[in-house]
Length: 213
Image (cartoon, rainbow, N blue to C red; front, side, top):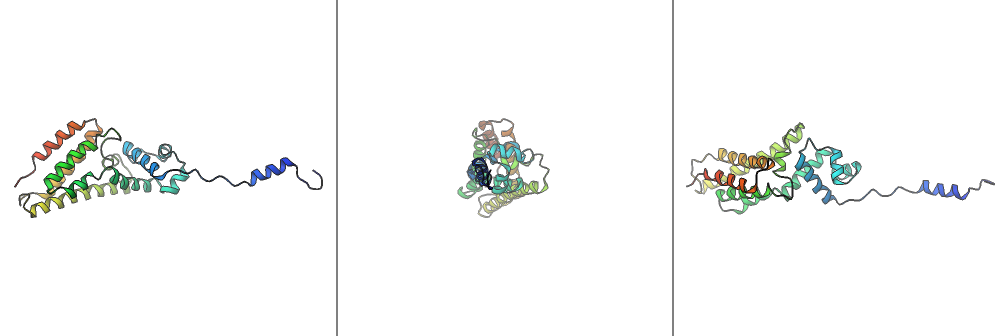
């Protein structure tokens, strides 16, 4: 080098050094969220690690945290999205059927189909994700969601009692909790390998005890 003049190699090295880093890898958020749903659905909250999530979502940890927050925040979004994509059959039955009996019969039949669908993990994510959950905030959130379902069941049953569709002496709270227990049990049975037809038979027996006017 003469008079402070840089060689070609030094100039190129400086350009490479000054070159800004590439933009973070882009990804489809909806697709990544769907993959997270399936991971939590299959393995539950506690058994699904951040490294598991980044692997199945095909993103790096920084991208996961930037897009979804921490694991708990991601799980909260997963549960909400699961309810929209996969778990809304119960709400639809309550809203669309003319009586509580018809609504719950439809709900149990559709649960038998949804919980055994070969296109995704079996059972209900909200039920299964709570298994062996040792994170109090997550456990409480899932419990509140399940209890809210029971409360909605009871409200619909009481409305039918007031309308004369069910006997006045019906124990609405017990019938609602019974229905919730059947649905949650069907979820676990599906995880254990019960077929759609077997769960449909359970649903039929469950409705046989419903009171009639």
